[in-house]
Length: 390
Image (cartoon, rainbow, N blue to C red; front, side, top):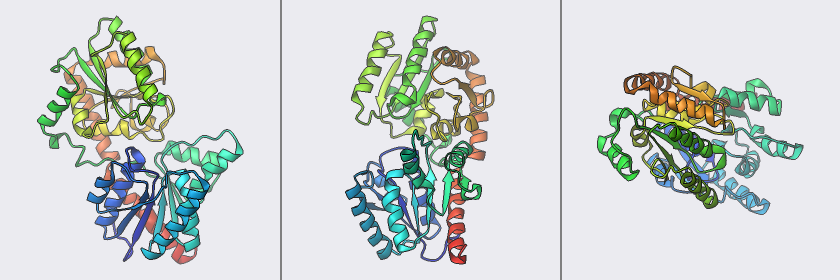
């Protein structure tokens, strides 16, 4: 993918801790650098700073996570200086609060803008709808799934040609089963206290931050139901509580009350997700709120693992029942227990074949290279349109 000479991209994201928007920010930064451009990221920073530097990007440390109007004005002034001094060609915003100062600065400096809708922003009143609509006050909107694109068009009534759907991508080099040394998998299984694998003891992995909307309570209830049926299984919750200590403690209490100690484990943040998926047999995505895309449903498929996901949102595009996994109604314990039991009853060989089918489809449709190429193509279109005065 070619970019204009001296192209400089400024992406704006609240923090660089963990998550789909943050990972996509790094992926696009890497693609821009590989195409000969410069990649700046305005953010408060976080644990992914080193990864950004490794990708060839540069952090512009600003309090972009702040919703304080005075801080936002200060950030806008700082961003104007960055745009002028670094000769920024285009600003790409990835979240609502930092979009305000970023777009103020971009407009003041006459720089084109792009926004990515990474989530489904709901509005109960006109003020919140106005706040959400900041993500559409740009030259082009990128939606991370067809589900998200439909939401943007319905919610904001903007011209269809202004919104393009680009599914999130997966790094096929990082998420490649062949590249994961068995020692990495063994180390995780040991750290997580998992027994040696067997046909009857399946390991289910729910990867995601500890928050009520992710559906952890549904899985605890389903696991308790399966235990009552005499089934042996293990469930791993891999993710930070991000300060939600009360919720983490409530999950731990539910595990104890259900007598699931040793069977359901909260292991905290995991830095080696490729190995994590191989340490498990089936991935879970029991979200109670529709995911706009759900990278957590695609990454395990790329690693050859089938997925059980909630039957709503973007996951209905990425998980196909009978072909790549199962879909279950969100929050319905009985349905989730049934899907988990079906996975267990499938047996090792059939489960592996289902996982291979999931991998084949995900590699074809959700390549990181394809996502980055499509994003850079949008940049070119926006720049050409500005140049042509359209």
